[in-house]
Length: 120
Image (cartoon, rainbow, N blue to C red; front, side, top):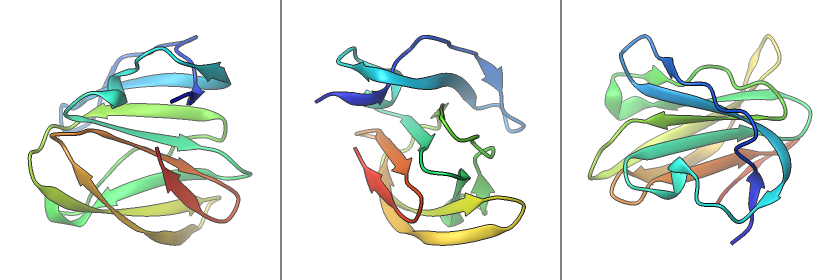
């Protein structure tokens, strides 16, 4: 399946709780395998007109960084059970879009749009 982003720019950062994070810019579709396509990785891509973030209530309310429009952040968060993920748009105020399920055995990519989100 073709993906929304490519690996043009990668930036490894340590999140405040020690999770591995990388950043990619949105660009032409790429068939290359990316980290979120593998177990333990959660990727959030902000499309549409707003930044976005996701929170994990089962992890004590841990949230991703706010992902700017046109970017994707990949978090190596592990896990091996189904977990609820709440997805939000952010423009100075948080707007709840909905929830989905993440399972670290599979990894997941979420892409936000102007008014919704979808799972790749």
